[in-house]
Image 1 (cartoon, rainbow, N blue to C red):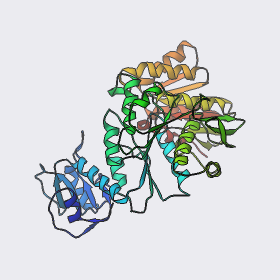
Image 2 (image 1 turned 60 degrees about the vertical axis):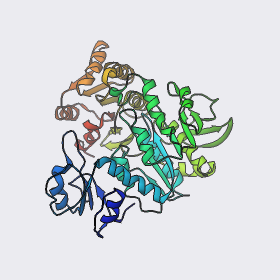
Image 3 (image 1 turned 180 degrees about the vertical axis):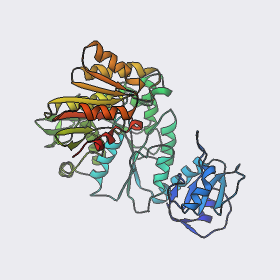
Image 4 (image 1 turned 60 degrees about the horizontal axis):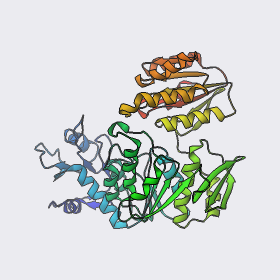
Length: 444
């Protein structure tokens, strides 16, 4: 928790150093202002090469490797064995000093949405901090925690992973009292050989000794195995099995939630995406365990909105875009396509889809499943990225229109030429393709 003096930070990191100048902010990017710069090593760039730039943007001190032998550029240098570990140590200290309740959220899909839902449900009762954006990594999560100001009562933290052991590490930085797994799918799958392995890595969020409750989705594959991980009480939920302790369904534009067979909530449901029913249910269960009544949850629900770039409807002239371009995996793509199908607007259903990344040996089959899902829904399909070639093959075999593009510029020109009045257009893809900004090429 900042502010701390330079000497205090050095002491925490087991280094003796004088300096009473206060540090208020921290950064890992030399282009962004921050009093304390962490010179993180990277695959392509080394943070030590940017110490001078950090000084120019206002940094007062820098955490550097003990092996660094270059100039200080006027910065107070604090040498450590491992710069990333130093960042995480300071973040853990921030959490320990405040002693808040911590809710951790993970899952292959729906982490950010569930986190944002839960934060809204809690804000009327607690001082809440939530992870900003998708700051859920070994770097992003601890960096966010250094912005804590000391009055926070509940932290709602998103925890992500690309390989096993990463979530366990995040729980040592911010040990959760309550944890949520939204769902499991083939996301960041290049480091895994099966869904079972991915589930096991996700369940690390339940294994810290501080974790008293683990909320999980029984609709995900191999969900019964969750009980083997962690000693806390497991709380199952479902949108498919009415026998689950917590169950939610949509009827006539109303969400109905059942707890142990008793109806506890019935309210209008105006949120797009069937999968978001489960995300809201998980958030509502967590809120209940933190003392929020069902009646309060119902009132707050009427104000809740999805985070930006999640099934966001944007009008450009008579064309309606569904911006869901935050990221993509097979599950989220098929759910977005279902939303495209059920929305009763637009003369044509058009989808613009990028390849899904980090799938390893699962890539071809996962893209084929998306193609088959899209086949009965989409009138025209536009694809970008090598992984989507299989989508074009499937559509060509069915004699349905599909267009493949190697780069974004040619895709944009094709869309500007081909889209028609009153089209309903889904934009869905990997974050690196940033398909959401295609909307800006069309006049309001």
